[in-house]
Image (tube, rainbow, N blue to C red; front, side):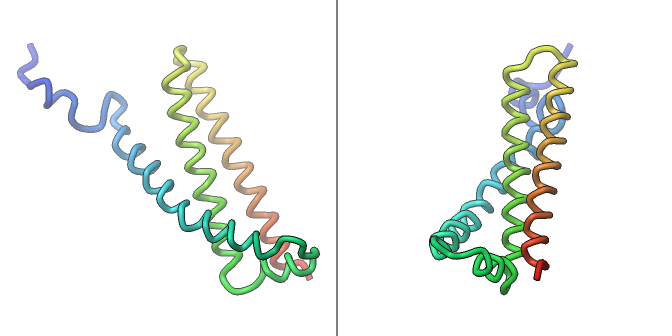
Length: 126
């Protein structure tokens, strides 16, 4: 017999004890992406029609490599969180669900590392 109220049973972290942290992570990464995406769009608009040397110079100047790196890492983390929610909601077999989440996170890490490597190559290529 459970002596807790209905509200007491639904409060907290959910059945996996991870729900609130996941929800907050998704909201915080989404909010962080707003100014980063605006910066990126306005920067790219200024680079329309630029040659490769101008783009390399822009990537390597000021804090642009750091902001690009932050944008890449936060964007892929946010995407992985969203894909995980979709998989958890629509995939019903536990084995395939776990495998799908692991594969999605691995792809996210690989793509993020690839993008960071591209930024580093543009930054330090002379």
